Length: 290
Image 1 (spheres, rainbow, N blue to C red):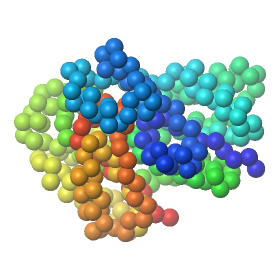
Image 2: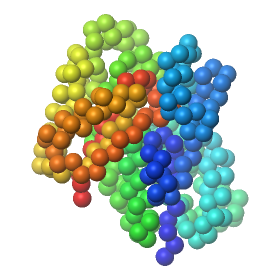
Image 3: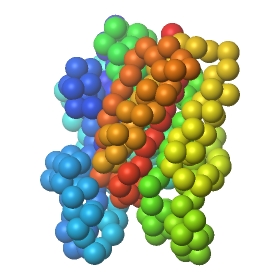
């Protein structure tokens, strides 16, 4: 049976070595600082982005890929891997129009070729490695020759089983992005309020709790995970940060006091997601070890 080809947005924030090892096809997204436009991971590295974010007086903006861009990617892959099904996994539709662009691209390509195309487009309902973990799992299964239907089912299962919380160091970026009001952002900063955020079943960011002070916020995140996995001790964990490796490592150490950690993934929050959360963010994703 022909091996499935796995496609994902760059916002999956998958470590480069894993992208290479599993043959994942990444479609980079775009961002801009004023009139300066960049392709994530191509024209600007993660390190360069956060340096520029710290220095720039203009906050970055991001844009989704167009249907024609995804159609181009799919067209090339269908030519390079004839007979192989494509599984395309995308940033939550609750945060971006990327998923809808990919769906339209599939329809456009089908009309262009005059036949149905074997492309499965999946809405991850998550961001950064929260859907990166689904992409990597799909790629591992594809490499083993797992049938398309089983891979898609496994991606869905992981989406149901993963749990995630993230902490932001500054409320400025959430306020600029319309996630919270300006008054709430100013008051939260003055009172050192640290919101604990997650993503709901519709793939939309929401506040789980608000805690005063970072140390209490970290303790509360651990408490939430322990409650989420009260009957499970063996877990996989991924921790993503935006220039906050100390905070990320601290959380991994604390999780190790409550769980047996199997796969541990460390990665950076990329430029596109980083545009919306800023420096100092730590995002933690846990799923049961199987």
